[in-house]
Image (cartoon, rainbow, N blue to C red; front, side, top):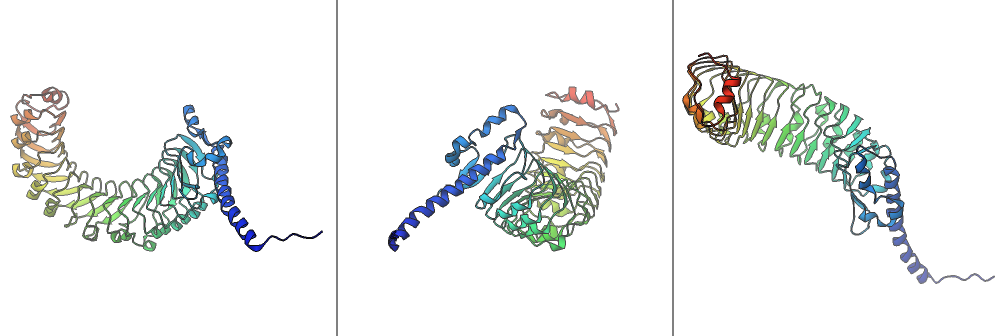
Amino acid sequence: MKRVQMPPFLLHFFLLSLLPSKATTSSSGTQAEALITWKNSFYFYYYYSRSSLDSWSLANLNNLCNWTAIVCHSNTKTVSKIDLSNLEIVATLTDFNFTPFLNLTHFNLGQNYFGGPIPSAIGNLTRLTILDLGNNLFEQEIPAEIGLLTELKHLSFYNNSLNGTIPYQLSNLQKVQFLHLGKNHLKTSNWSKFSGMHSLTYLDLHRNVIHSEFPEFIFECQHLTFLDLSQNWFTGQILEPVFTKLGKLEYLNLADNLFQGPLPSHFPKLKHLHLARNNFSGQIPTTIGHCTDLTHLSLASNFLSGELPQSLSNLNSILQLDFSDNVFTGPILPSVISNWSLVVHLNLRGNSFSGNIPSELGQLINLNYLGLDSNDFGGQLPIQIGNLNLLYRLNVSRNHLTGAIPRSNGNFAQVCISICPITI
């Protein structure tokens, strides 16, 4: 039989017509099947949540781009985003096939019940810009392969049960802006292997078991506006570079650690400064008064001493002040508190403040809480305190006060009598 040979130009156009269509169908079909297989391993914490992924079915195989929680690339019609957040899913990532999703840019499993390890295969998703596995039950170590996701801008492992050291490969993520590792069981890393992450603006390591001095790589993250290292075992002194190099910081939380020594003398234009429950000592530096944008300042439960500096009067945006449980002395100068008209929470308890309680406190009309107990105040409670109509809690016990509780235009007198006995 004579063989019929197709002309070369016809063969060329025939192959061109087949290949793109076949590749697209195969890719989207493979993705759909992989998602259905993964879904079959899901349980749902609440029964009514089961219907949320009804569109993920074999009957709907050719409609992948309209599935719940799925977004497709406009050109290839393949998956670019998977967002399963807040669906009460009980599952693991070990049942997820990463291979068909190498072009994924967003992967969000936040606020679910995903458990087990984070597979090292996640490092194959090298086009990811957002990876959020926060608020789940993930265990074991953070895989070093996360460092391969160099396009990441947002990475969250917040509130899981991850342990082991923080892999230094995370500092390969030079485009990451948001990094949240808080509320896990992560241990000290070899910070010397970390490089500065120059795009980083948000870094949260709070509530882990990190035992080290202040990580020096953070000094090189000079675009940081938010830094939370609280509830760890950090030790040593806070050196000036923390503030001189991190000049863009607005939020700094170092509370509940073992930091010691004096407070730095230089501060950036912070809005939140939380240094409570450490071992800081010495006086409050007068330069803290340069932070005129401060709205929250907590220095509670340290060994700070001396009088409150006059420069604190510059904090005219302050909403919450907590100086409790230190060894501060001297009177509360009216000129110090005169500009705190916005403050709603003022706690001076557990010190050795003396003299009379200044009547100017009655001008702080937004106060909700005023703690003056366990000091050496004497004299009478000023009648101007009765002007604080928004005050719901006042404690002046364990002082040397005399006289009567002043009348109040609001509910203050009743609340005060019930919780704040004073010597008359």
